[in-house]
Length: 150
Image (cartoon, rainbow, N blue to C red):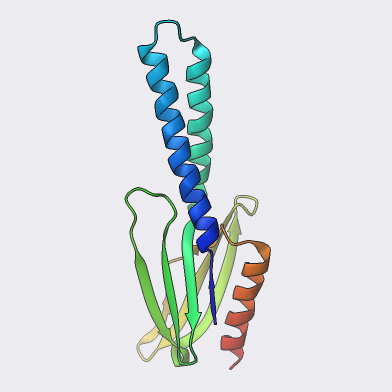
């Protein structure tokens, strides 16, 4: 069983690239064109604000696969620059619980996995699932509840 947000991440990556191009174009036109008015600068600032809003959400690509004996989680930031790819595996016997936290009026959603090892409990760092649509989030919860119950 797998669940991921590949399509949503690709769309957001394209939005980041498009907004970067528009911001650069508006600022270049404002600074190098003699007849440019303040409207270009205001437009660039609006796009910068929207860009920063998307960065605030800390959106990640998230992939979870369960193949019967282990859970594989892969994730990376949706921002197209300076990506850090991360992954971890959780043996089914070690899986203890998960927690979904909503912050900033539900705009920032994270999931955190807890495992119990012979050396004690361990919590993985929270991973953003802000880009998950409602149906995929429900499917993710269903998969994790099945694993937790078995």
